[in-house]
Length: 122
Image (cartoon, rainbow, N blue to C red; front, top):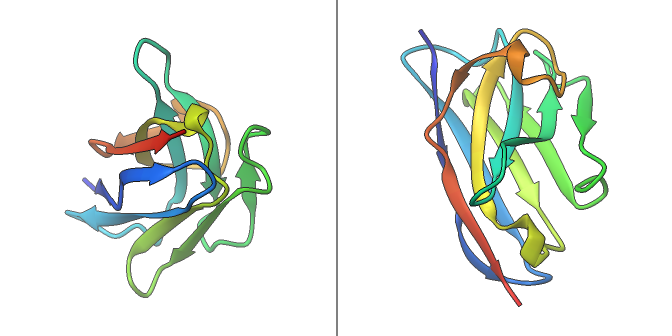
């Protein structure tokens, strides 16, 4: 079973940037679609971005489109989320997940990481 492991979270001021990484533990990520989700305190987990098996197709939530970029490097067995122009409302725990398709549907994903905290101060 593949186990995604996130890293790169931290504290950043509004307008700043962060780069999140998602590496595989116990398997390869190259054969699956990957998604990023986030969950703020007291709120449900929401879709952020997804990428296809080879990286040829990407999907973004409207709230992050134009600011965040999802990418992958299968040679490094790693998926990335570049967060630019960060806003306080981006504050959340960010989760990486492995799935069958690059969609926003959480039911599509079968393996989830433990999350990494992103905090954006104003």
